[in-house]
Length: 124
Image (cartoon, rainbow, N blue to C red):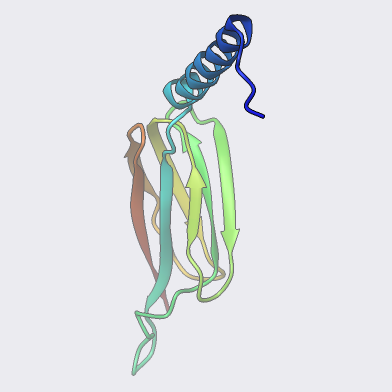
């Protein structure tokens, strides 16, 4: 037996479809785009024959704003890199890895973009 749909049921189904489409659209429209920094750290220098520059070293990066507020930090292990979500803005990245000498770097993060940073830290 085939059942017919009455006008009230049609109206309710149509309203449910419209509400669902508007809800999904609102989530996509107001969703915060992903932005931040990603990168890695390698050692350079050292006594002959020198350090393997392609080997990713463990480390930590501390992120500061231009007004000297600590925003975030991230640590990673040997053979790994890092990824850290950040709001758009300008930041000072301060890397650290054991006794290696690492220089800080200023980066500008744009909306919906990840900035790649490769730290080369010197060892004696």
